[in-house]
Image 1 (cartoon, protein in one colour):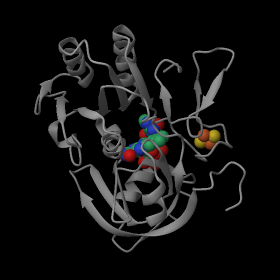
Image 2 (image 1 turned 60 degrees about the vertical axis):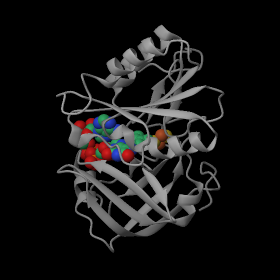
Image 3 (image 1 turned 90 degrees about the horizontal axis):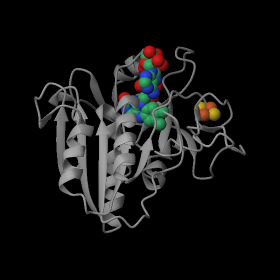
Image 4 (image 1 turned 90 degrees about the vertical axis):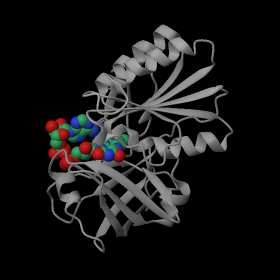
Length: 263
Ligand SMILES: Cc1cc2nc3c(=O)[nH]c(=O)nc-3n(C[C@H](O)[C@H](O)[C@H](O)COP(=O)(O)OP(=O)(O)OC[C@H]3O[C@@H](n4cnc5c(N)ncnc54)[C@H](O)[C@@H]3O)c2cc1C
Ligand code: FES
């Protein structure tokens, strides 16, 4: 596809669904065979899926790549509205129109002594690939996951996980940011970097915490998107630097330094 906005590694193609698993009553995992995407996707990048041939929904929907193995790509999602409802009704053998990889990945080249991953709800979907890239770089990685209840904790593929739930059904009874704060107090002297994805209130609390403790932090936003590659301006996020104005979450993000944007 020749388009000046698109990266050369990006493809748009129909892929056959090879596996569908219900993780719980509202979270589904889809697998499709897509060697090019499996090879080239970087942690934090996303794919944009055309749900079906109809105009409802009209626009593609963005999803993180949850995992890749043997040339297959996995995504996990919860039902939010029409698009994800329709996606949850797909069958093995159905085709999925996928555009990607899109967006800027996490920067895994910093020199931290401890990499701390933080995921809230389905935001955890972007963490397994990130964990593996950081481990390949020789880093020590620990993950903090938060969710409403233990059924919503996406712990698969993650090695060293500490959990927090709103109802106390797994791990710490409270928010994942509170749990992380206790950890930081105990491990004050370590040179840490935080990588996070989750709902905006979690990212706000996390940004405040990392400012208080002066810790580098990258966050991946789940801003609603349309085109996914920088032409519609539908995903603008406000930058703290007033002279720079706005950035596009799909093209300049979805990963940003927590101190550069206004949430
Ligand atoms: C880069 C990126 C990666 C993502 N990765 C995943 C993932 O791995 N798994 C997953 O389940 N979801 C992910 N999302 C969110 C997912 O794209 C939305 O849930 C999906 O677009 C909703 O589509 P829908 O048609 O079902 O809902 P819609 O009918 O579009 O919306 C239903 C309701 O949900 C709200 N909504 C829609 N999108 C969002 C959003 N991004 N954040 C908060 N509220 C929203 C709408 O305002 C509306 O109230 C990601 C989003 C982005 C931008
Ligand atoms: S979604 Fe179109 S510019 Fe970002």
